[in-house]
Image: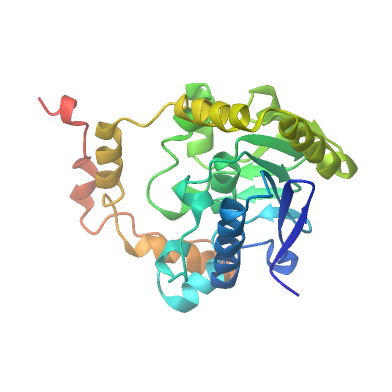
Length: 269
């Protein structure tokens, strides 16, 4: 059975992650299969809208932590892939509807963020896990998610959110019962397909262009902050997860490093 199942018909491609025993974690096999699926969708002349979902109790748990520990390198991106993934790269000029059937954690949360429209089942759980794994929380959520600063801060610190709250703050478009998840996503796809093709493409390009961007200065600060701390803690967080124990973090290689916090260029004067 494939770790990614695909349905095609009536202009719609359904991409379903199918690794329920691992909560659809992004192992190497899953990542390669998703890359193949998204390349097919990008290149197809018949398929105009994608619905992205998962099987089981999770949409996607993010990085396959056990696989990272076995590989000895942090992050799914540290593993080689066969080809590019146009969904991750943002190079698909067709709308994507994400249908969140359960947990969306870490890299799974990122997959949700990249979608153009979002439908979620009631009670689905969301977590931006970067603060747990990368020495820096998801600094861009307040921008890409267009969320209030306090909500973005809570997300950045890896607090968990239920779908109901994210619907209230406008991050989720539709909140539905489990048996209405795919029918609702299909209805949204059907509406998109009633639009003139050029209008659908042009409007998508315009709306994506209107998403706020993280300023270059903040990107540079983020790059420096990711080096601010003991890199050993990256793997320790993953080992602790895989071994189901509390992590034993080091913090800093030199205790004085804690007080040498990188700053914005404009704050250095």
